[in-house]
Amino acid sequence: MSNQPYFSTPGARPKSVLGVDVDVYLDSSMTGGQYATYRCTVPPNVGPPPHRHDGFDEAFYVLDGEFEILFGEETRTVGPGTYFFVPRGLVHTFRNVGETTASFLGTASPGGHEAFFVETDALGAEGPLSMEAAIGVCERHGIELVFPS
Image (tube, rainbow, N blue to C red; front, side, top):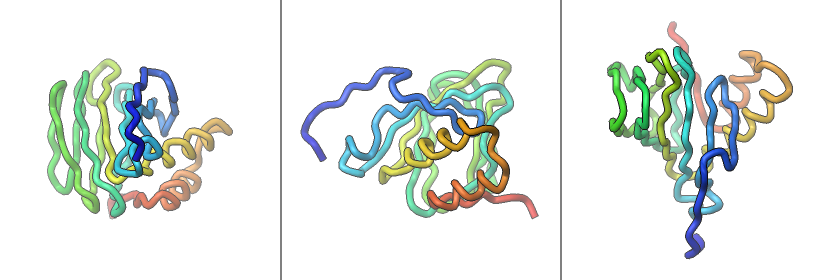
């Protein structure tokens, strides 16, 4: 890891990931692979399907708005100032349950998760992602979508 400081400003590297605007503040190349940090801006009633990943942990800090969080078999509604940690392997998701845009700061450790954002953004620029394409990009990045049986 470099001993140089990094500064990142909002909008520096925006990505669009399945309806969520993602701005990567620090990627793994800046942290020696230790972590990546990103801000997600989420429209009302939007969020990813339940999923899990064995390769990294995630932590989230809610900046504004209100989210419904599923982790494991527990669901909670959280607002600004809430911090929550999702260990690798745990099924989880989030959804903006408010009437306005909501956002959170996320960190994935170790780093590398930002590559999923980059690839999904590039695929989405070609047109709406099919379910098959979404599952494929998730699988390439070690993310398993968990659908109800």
